[in-house]
Amino acid sequence: MKEIDARGLSCPAPVLHTKATLEQEHPDTIKVLVDNAASQQNVERFLRSQGFEVRLEKEGHDFAVIGKCGSPGAAVEPKAAPVATGANQKIMVMCATDRIGFGDETLGQKLMVNFIRTLKEMGPELWRLVLVNNGVKLAVAGSPVLAELKAYEATGTSVLVCGTCLEHFNLLAQKQVGQTTNMLDIVTAMQLADKVVNL
Picture 1 (cartoon, rainbow, N blue to C red):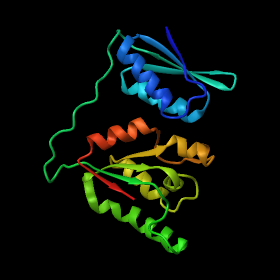
Picture 2 (cartoon, rainbow, N blue to C red; picture 1 turned 120 degrees about the vertical axis):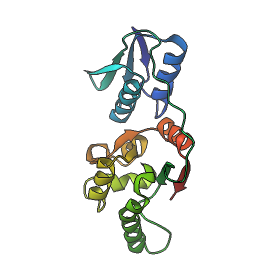
Picture 3 (cartoon, rainbow, N blue to C red; picture 1 turned 90 degrees about the vertical axis):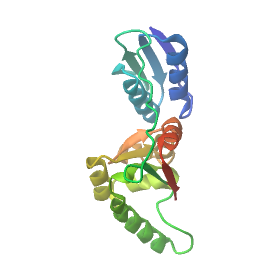
Picture 4 (cartoon, rainbow, N blue to C red; picture 1 turned 180 degrees about the vertical axis):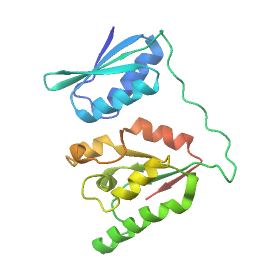
C-alpha cells in the first residue's frame, strides 16, 4: 500500500500529491493521511473519480483516506471537452462573493439573490456553479438561495463549494448544498468549460 502523509498541507496540495502519485507510481492501493475534513472530502472524491473504491478511517484527530483499485494503473482519465455548438455549450459561473457590486451591502446581497434565482434562464447551458471566498456563504444554512442551488443540482448543474474557504470561515459543518471542492477541481472545470463567467 502506498502511503502519503498530507497532514499540515493546505488545499489543494493533498489532492495534487495524490494525483502525482497515481500518475507516477500507479498503485493499486493508496492511503492518504489528512488533518482536516475539507482535505478528506476532496481526496476521497478525487480517488472515486479515478476509479478507486474508497473507505475512510479516523486516526485520532486525523483522517486516513484509503483507496483500492481493481488493477494497477486503472485510473480514469478526464475526457476532453466536446466541441460546443450554440445549443450545448457549457457555461461555468464562478461567484467569489455573496453580493454584487460595491456600495450598499443590502442592495448588493439582494442583487446576488436575484442573480442566482435568474440563472435558471440559462437552461441546460448552466453547467457548473462554483462558489469561492465569500461566495461559499450562499451554500450554508440560512442562505436565501439554498432552495435554488438545490434545484440546480437536481437538474444536473454541478455546484462546487471551496473547501479552503469553508474552513476559513468555519462553515464546513454548515454547508447544505454542493460538493466540497478544491482549486484543482476549479481549474479543471475552467479548462473544460466553453465559457466562464466571474462575479
